[in-house]
Amino acid sequence: MERDDASNFEQLHDLVADMDDIRGLLEGITGIAAAAMTRTAGTQVECAVTLYRRRRPPTIAGSDDEAILLDGHEQRLADGPCTDALQSGEPSLLDAPSDARWPAFRKELEATSFDSVLGVPLDLGSEASAALNFFAAGAGVFTGEVSKDAGEFAQVAARALRLGLRIAGAELKAVDLEAAMSHRTAIDMARGIIMAQSRCSGEEAFNLLRDVSSRRNEKLYDVARSVVAGIDGSATSTFFES
Image 1 (cartoon, rainbow, N blue to C red):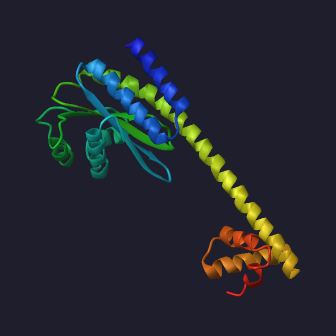
Image 2 (image 1 turned 60 degrees about the horizontal axis):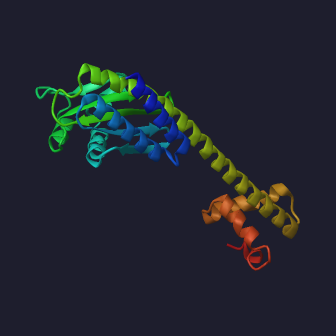
Image 3 (image 1 turned 45 degrees about the vertical axis):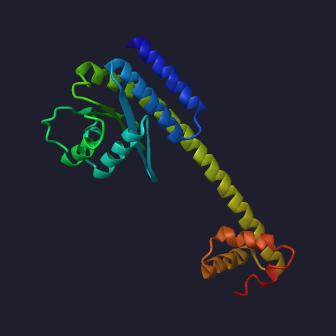
């Protein structure tokens, strides 16, 4: 498995280096995961994942449409081995036909081509959570050895995803900072225009902007842009009349 681990790490590293967004990274991870577990199990295995992050909607991806659909059902129901793995921090297996756990999820599973499911948590720290959801047709696919290999893959995948999340977070902060600077510039320019036209102080000009923003139910930035856009006098002469 060591050679496979090295190959998986290299593929995952390349995914992070070339990623456009987190969804694309998740799609790549689940594709590699499915291929790796298919080789280990000797039969077709599919994989899906739902990523949870603070203040952001869940992101779902997978190697197969049916796997994505079933993973989505499980997340909606909050009922199944993947959900159990997320809560316990340990792999969770649904394999035996007599297993009476997770009845709502089992009903969804029966409508698919899959018979067994293995949920494996990803250690992503305190800012995010996810678990790989492996699916296979037939029972007995996820043996102890296969489950062990799935856990080892999850450790490597988690490191790649943590790095991807840090990169995406840094890029998002950079975009937010650029937007904030743009907004600040527009507000400062508008305040200067009002100070020159109304012969008032900077504080009085800002208060005028804020009052118009509140009265019109518009964002302060949008009000400021209107002032700057009307610098030729066609708009600013009537700016404060409504």
